[in-house]
Amino acid sequence: MYYHPRAEQVLSVKLAKMYVNRVYYEKKRDLENKVQAQKLEKTKPNLKISKETLEEQRRQLIEQVKADVFTKTMVLSPEQIQEARILRQTDPYTYTSQYLAKLFHVSPEQIVLVTKEPEEKVKQDLRELHERNKNRPRHGSKKYEL
Image: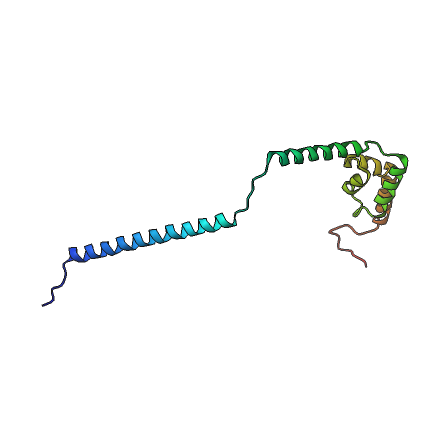
């Protein structure tokens, strides 16, 4: 004859199953982590660098910096100033102050000082712009003529 199990018996069986499942999945996770760690160890490159190679790289970098400092001139010749002005006037978007500074081995601030337009020309351009827009209707007026 079949007897229906009591609630305590059912609960103990469920707890036992949960315990077995938890232990199983913990061991499975640990095994997967070990396999992943082994794969990483196999693919890990050997990054050991000797002290001599580091010193050599340091010496080369110092020499390069010294060469850059000594090759850069701090003053532009009149020919270079004229050339920078011409390049800047032909295409200011291509020949930016950064580009010209690298080209002539000077700071960008010097290029800005050298290539800026004289104040008289700026004033003349403003006068011409004012004359062109003199008869243009103001914003908000109802009278527009095309």
